[in-house]
Length: 334
Image 1 (cartoon, rainbow, N blue to C red):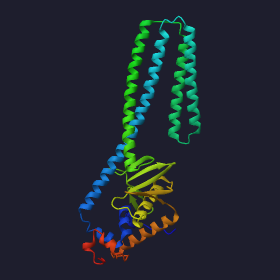
Image 2 (image 1 turned 180 degrees about the vertical axis):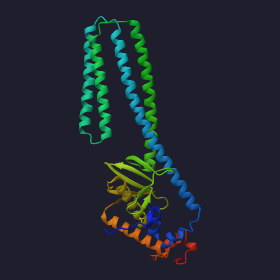
Image 3 (image 1 turned 45 degrees about the vertical axis):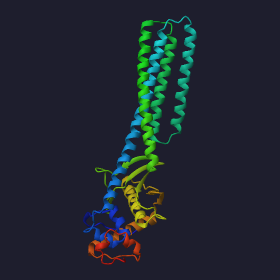
Image 4 (image 1 turned 90 degrees about the vertical axis):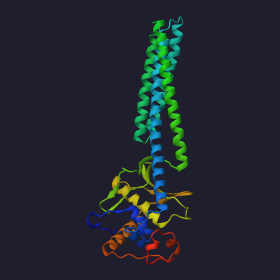
């Protein structure tokens, strides 16, 4: 593949690439004539709103996960305390109660075995770690219950009442975190449906977000956000306004640029990128042909930057009508 050599470390942004793909002359004029019109301001506002909503999804999912973990721990501790308190009550039928607690211990052991099976089938490292933690806790609870079953003969009514009260307090704590988890999950679910977000959000384009750079190709950019699906990082670009009949060439090249940047940064190429219009989303395949086309366009842009001469490359009046630089363009068709 013919490769462009960046001039003195000059980076071309994916945004400029999108403008160039729309019209080379429009892109060139944008360097000195990029009016701050109402449409541009609305676009910036919508982009900021998208970033804030995605940030809420990310924070909400982290809060829900943290709360679910706290529910589990609080419920487990409450169970242990309650069983310990129960074991201190002066029962006449200690043997029967011990048998019941032995059955409860067996249930917890079976639960641990179930999560052990889930862990063995999981291909995600993070899930594997979660399952291992759950197995450990279930096993500990089972052992404590079994020990209480053996030591059930000892009794202290006062201590049993104190332990049952403490168990209730821990259950109240578990209920609080359960409520917190449900609220966060509901908010996240609503936002995901509204913005049609799937997968785990790995990156969001906000003020201080990382800029992806490829020194090899002299390319830089920040996608609206990146999601993780089936072990792949997928760049996503949101486009507002009207929904075209098919993905626009300039938008396609922009998403291909983000795919290239992810490949260069992560050393693993995404299979596709997502273009999201108000009424539709398109999967843009990332392959060698797309990559070659991108490199070719970068070469054309650098040639124009070198010569300082750019021209309109289309005969479509509609493009000129919708161009924000038409007032200063000498080659406009309308």
